[in-house]
Image (cartoon, rainbow, N blue to C red; front, side):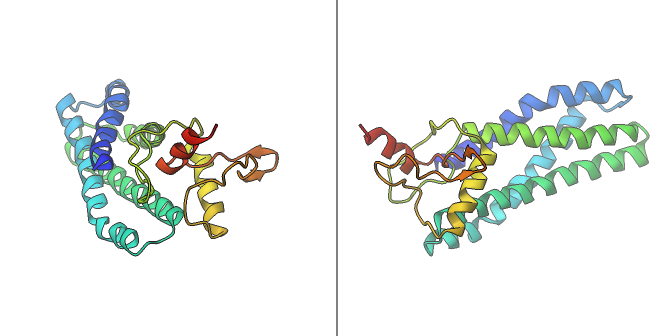
Amino acid sequence: MSAGVKLPFLFFATFAVCFPAFFVVQVLVGSRLRLLQVAVLVFGALALTSVLLAAFVPITAFFLITGANYYFQHLLNIAIAGVAGLFGMYALHEGLSVVCEKRGVYPRKALTIMRAWALLFAFVGIQLAWSLRPFLGGRHHPLQVFGTYQGNFYAAIIYAVNKLMHGDETPTPSPGRQDSIPRFRGFVIPPIDTGADSAHRRKRP
């Protein structure tokens, strides 16, 4: 339920951060689309992303019920979100392409800017999603609405892949060990912030 509330907020907040710059730059390069028209196109892309995420719920529920490896579930949900986001941005690109070719109110060079903006949208969304974590908690641990670890998303992905390859099933670190975090070429990969990790840190002296 917590993730179900945070995910729509994630979409709306990312839209609020990124849309003003997108619209202003589009106008500067010659777009004659009105504000509402561009907003509808972008919201249409986000709606498609949401529908695709909902369509994948039975798959994630299946792995959750069957007790799949926690880090596998973590990476699976990230992959699903990435695929859904790609389809959403592709739909936005195709919609703007139709407007460009058939209506003559949208310059072709603005499509290149749209692609760059899609990357910016993705980076902002990833950073905001990291700030709203965890979306997937340990089912045997208390609910945690927001995480407190100050790592970053990309290091957490490497950490999850490493844990999955070594067969670790739960996000709980070993008690009293400071060197349980894997090291790669001189830097430390921080653990994924989960309810289990944070609860364990609060209990440590």
